Length: 241
Image 1: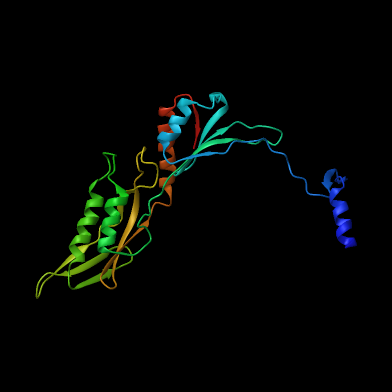
Image 2: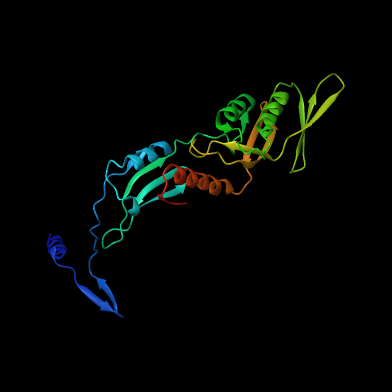
């Protein structure tokens, strides 16, 4: 009881600041009093973010704001540094509703085909081959319905032997790598294409797998696309990515 009373009294005492080697230390934990900030608005699209900035219903000074492209799926409108502790206010953040992509997961032919058509875009860049997605879909449909298959794998390419008759077999080489455009950033901007390793195996039927093969370079491209979109949509706004 006496110990608890002593600790309570010490807790009410003012902190003692001492200097050791010209550095200040306190005998208590001190908590800073930060600049009050509003609750951050949460939206799901870049269009909603543009609407908020252009309407300016909160009468914000545009020259003291900047837009931070935090990731391919997150963009926030923030203030300049405030107060003694250099706080920032985050007024609004656009957060992407991310699709579940069929990446790094073995799927059967039907599930893989549905996911590829629902979660992958066609490239807008005229220099890219738009047929890679269609080529993968065609390949899946050609090997998924066979009764007997065999695979040859040298670690780089895979060849699948498909039984086409009583004594003949057709050998089909997997397209690899393939250039695809998954929906990985906001739909208002172009989906960045990237390379994928396409694999197959026979395990309770044919199964298929996609694995990213660009080292995450698509992230920088997606953030650049968002930056360019916001600079065009809201001229004069400071945008960093």
